[in-house]
Image (cartoon, rainbow, N blue to C red; front, side):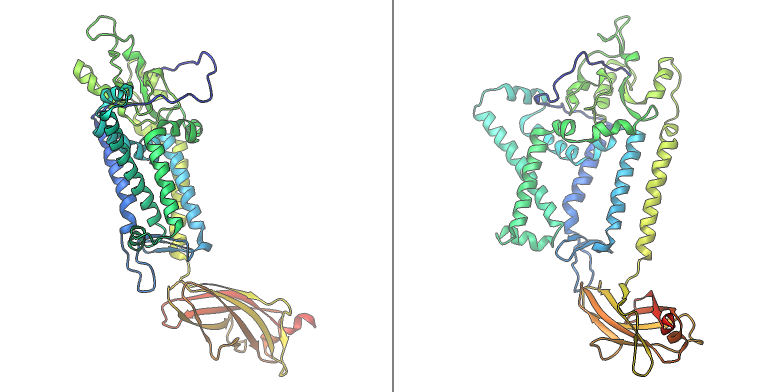
Length: 480
């Protein structure tokens, strides 16, 4: 695993030289095609998946409902006050990125980053329209004529269509997809929708078509951060220079296995030569491995001149020894710690998801005054109940109160302000506020005690959901 030392400081930004990666076949290229198809399929198809939640709720499986401040994911519904679920998922994503980078280097960048996925798609279109590497280089140097204009316009049109589809799919996540598509096609959608599509289209077109590796090198912070995540056990792509050097024609005495064919450089989407050692630009996509293995087959040499390797194994391989088992590199204290934290947060989120109450409410006592003495000597406490109806339709709830010890304490009386009975109807998808009056009879133990623990219950009249909140009842004796 070689490295190069810079001779002098260079400019902070270098003008872009167009990169035209050559077509290559191999295990890593196939893996990238499969992952690209899978991820693009998920992105474009997901907004069209339906999920029946009843007549009063949206039937889109994945929906960020900004108007009603909710997030739907199949059977899960997240409200604004439950944003900790989203925060937990973001933390898990960060830890997952640390985990994979620590174990396998920049595999996220090489296989799953949106910039990589859409750039791969744009390069595929470019190759289909203009030809492989050499043909595209010739076209670049060619003067503008009918052929060049035709190919460029065809390519840019296809890129633009991909950009429109990308922006269109994005806005479908925020409202009902079929309805929005109808409105978009008939010119009746909101200006926000058209603007969002236009911005997403422009950025996809520019980033995937023209900026490409410049985004990874200059705009993305991850190449700088990844160094802190990697150590000598991290498995990453490297050129085995002790086997490849000196470069030259095959079969010549003293030459290494590298025939200096430039295949690894020609297929690199970042335009770097992996033989120059580890570089910030490398996204570990594995295409150089496929290209090198293909050439090794042609010259009758074993695979692996370029391959995944851990720095710790370099000395062993130089000495002709077997490298450490790959699983020992992957399962080490750092990765185990990342995985433990990642799994712990995931388990915590799942437990919290299934333990959350189906009825969301809280009770706040009125502190001024703490209590009111009625004409008959009874003690009244006043509370404010805030109840959020998550059912998507107007729902009636029954409100009740209990004490810890029913035998020693006289029963309490609960009255709802403005309501004739013990029920309240909450509008669909809204936070409803209700004033409660709870009274203890004169002379009762609760009327005489300073503080008594009580529970206020909210129950769906259909008997499907029930939840309780603890509160305190204040008696007269605290001022005697």
